Length: 144
Image (cartoon, rainbow, N blue to C red):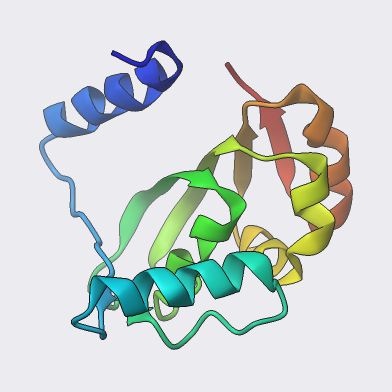
């Protein structure tokens, strides 16, 4: 077992225990895993490369108290950017990013725009808190 993923496993158990949870999963347009990996790799290497051609997300159909997103890296936000009008459907939005380095923040302007739509950002690197708060204007909290 990978100890560094313990928070992820605990969160999965917690979410599974909640009565009312709706999961939103990307719908990949390409039927080839190779094409999908290529498009994701391009968007990681070239942050100005638009994220919008590899997949789409279903719209949020009803209103929610909490919209919680957990992702490993900042470039995983490309999935969130494709959910149509999610900010109008949720009362509180929280995102937890497991790996967010200072160098990632400046290189990913599209990701910063997505993060600005959240109410709270949780990150696991204390060194990134102030910089991320400055770039997004969103309450940013270090958590382990």
